[in-house]
Amino acid sequence: MFEDVITRQTKLCGRILRALASGSKSVSEIAAALRVDKGGNISDALEQLAESGMVARDGGANPATGAAAFLVNDSPEARPVAFDFGGRKPAACRIVDAKRTDAEIPFPATLPPHSFLLVEFA
Image (cartoon, rainbow, N blue to C red):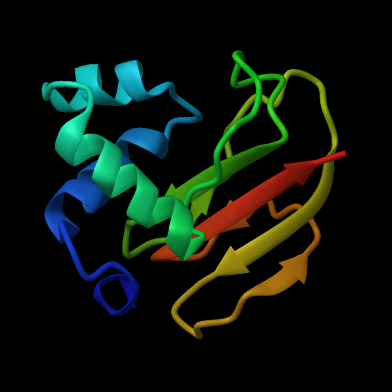
C-alpha cells in the first residue's frame, strides 16, 4: 500500500513516518531524529507525504495546539493509541489500513496493523 502512494524516496518517507509515530514533530525535530540535515531531501519527502494525505501540516507552533495530528502503526500487530492531545477532543478521525479504506471513524483505542490515522480538531 505504502509504495503505491509514495513513489519517490520511499525509504526516507518510511523513516519520517516512523519518527512521527510517537507524535507530531517539527521539521527540525524530524531531521534530528533521522540524523539528517533539515531541508532538501527531507522537505521533498515531507511534501510528498503531505500531498498523499499521509501527514498533515500542523498550523500551530506547538504540536499540542495544531489543527491535526497524524498517527502511524507500521507494526504487523495492532497497537494501543497512546498520544496526548493536550486535553483536546478529536472532531474527526480518518483511517487508512490494509483494506485501503479512507473511512471516517470514532477515535479508536487501538490502531490496526499497518495503518495510518489522521485526527482533526475543531
